[in-house]
Length: 178
Image (cartoon, rainbow, N blue to C red; front, side):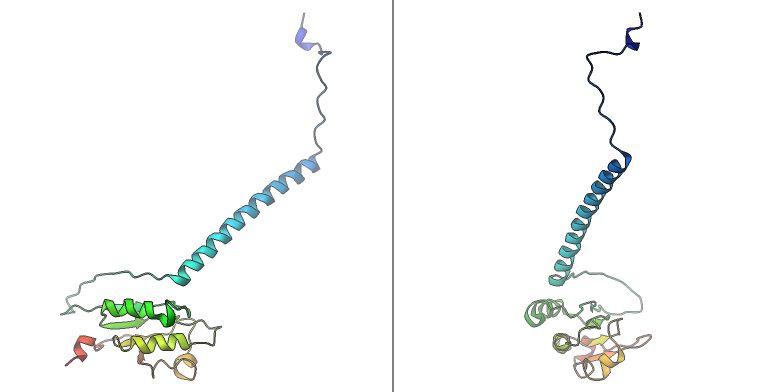
């Protein structure tokens, strides 16, 4: 007759279900562990990226043509150094830029950080690079008029011309040689 409806006498009784509160606590604990592991991995990635960018820089080449330019002109654009040095006294960066033989060197801002009062490495860099080619600079969000013109960051005396607005008729290094 309907054997499946009969209870088996030999079967072990089912364990009672864990209370809902205990199951939720376990779930929250597992989620917290997973989030902690993800946070550690993310922090490690950020640390390695910051360490890499502090000791490495990127040189990228672009080639543009224009009917308005009658000769080849080579620009070197430097930005976002944030007081970092590449080699002792920036020797590596200066050497690489010298080997590129630019006609102009453009500082696109953020050579320094606004919280750091020690600008001497950037002053020395600017001074050395102004011997490589004419240098022009614009302010970044970390610089201010005070830094460029008064006191701490005297780039004008170190060979950098600060430009505002549209720039035309910049004398190239090849034009300056006579």
